[in-house]
Image 1 (cartoon, rainbow, N blue to C red):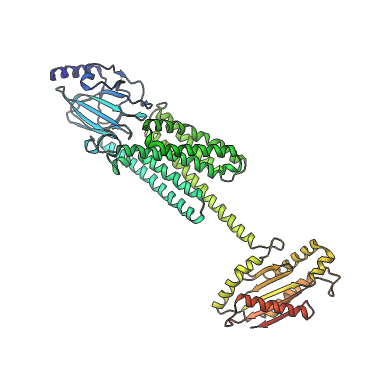
Image 2: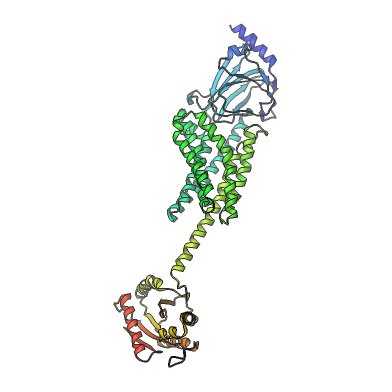
Amino acid sequence: MRLLLSFLFFLSILQAEVLLLDKETEKYNLVPIVEIAIDSNDTADIETLLEHTLRFKKSEQDFFYFHFDPKNYWFRFSLENPYTETLDYRLNIPTAWLDEVRLYTFHDDGSYTLERSGDHVPQKELALPNRSIVFALDVTPGEHLYYLRIHAEDALQIPIFLTQRETFYREENVLNLFFGVITGIIIMMILYSLFYYIYLRDHLYAIYAGYIFLFIMMVLSTHGYFLHYLWPDAFWFNERFYIFSFIGYLGFMTWFAKEFLNVKAFSLFWEKTLSSIALFFFGLVLLSPLLPYALVMQIGVAMAAVVPFLLLIPTLLAIRSGQKWAKFYLFGWVPNIIFYTLWALSFFALIPYSLFLNNANSIGIVIELLIFSLGMVYRVEEIVRSEYQLSNDIKKDALTQVANRYAFNQEFPELLDTAKAAGQYIYFVMLDVDAFKLYNDSYGHPMGDEALKEIASALSSRLQRSCDRIYRLGGEEFGLLLCADRSEKIEEMVESLRESIEARQIPFTESDTKVVTASFGLIMVRPDTKVDYTEVYQHADRLLYQAKAQGRNCVVSQVI
């Protein structure tokens, strides 16, 4: 038997193309020199293979891709070491989702060594523990024959590289750093989104956090980090977790697009369409433990090829409808589609494989998420600005543009307590336009409104310190909270306010003064006086009515 294998081994060497190794070349792409045979019936083993039960043919491409076809694929290649010393290489297939890869290394006597790797091989049986497919090749002087047998139920993306040991681990460290940086960025974005979700109670930020969380789970799972570091040998769980992250990511991607673009505001059809697509993905996640892995993945891959381009339609419709944030979505989505297209073309072997293209999908999504984050920041600013504006509008009198009764009720108690705590006097004024009902009856309510605006303007022009407050308390009644100190003559200040209203010369021929005037009640509260804001208000109201009783158009004051 040994003699037969030796004879078949030397015969295979004669047939296989030989790669002459060179110390100066750090990395080889073996795909152009390997020969491939397909075992459709899963009947061939290495002995029958040497007997030429399968027909090998030379590869005509730089990269292998097989679409969800659970056959056994055999690859054959020869290496020649022209030097006197052993050359240390790593044979690497930078793909983490191959079920099982067997490497047969033939020796000079025709015997062979079998090593295994793959995401369905127990970790203790791996040729080299690594997140992808890696074998150590110590190529001794002379010519050597190798066979690879690859099996997977997933789509097979098979670049085959022979790399010098130092170069391989240097590239591996760069990739680990790359994914570490991406993971760090994503974690910060998740925390940022959750913070704003808690702060704003806006569910869009929770959706965004789920979206980017599933993205990084998908990326790390795709590149074998979880199986290698977290749950080695949990093969079924690893497949289902990848389905959960991949299909779940597509669901959250669609859901986020629907909510971020506020699709229901401009298209009921697209709102229902995107909702249905998202629900389909979430339903597929729930059913995935009961369905064949390959079937779920084929559905997911097919949908992933369509949905990103489909989302461009509601994005453009949102921009046309005037959605403020839709441009951020477009600016993020276009780079993602470009990088995704490059990755897909490389994945399906339509353009040459490269390390960059192999990770282009992840790079595109990171760019997309960073731009989306800027959009979310802009959205936060818009929300805060809108809430601030709404808060101001709620507290502002629509007619006179001074603060209203609601603002007075909110601010006056707090300002009173602050002044007491600081040992300051409180100066509160109530004023009422004299005979305003007669004015309205004589000139009409539109003219009455104009008179109130003039009065508010007169008060505002005289009270320009940031601590002064003017409130329209209702109808023709105003309240003033003044921040003067005891060195100022507060009575003279209030008298000047009364004069400024009279000086506006708003015609009112039916009154004794022939112009619009107002009566004032001024209450001055000592810091040690124990009164609350309702008592202060009542004192000022009583003084106002005394001013009315004394003939109107005057100021009545009191210190308590």
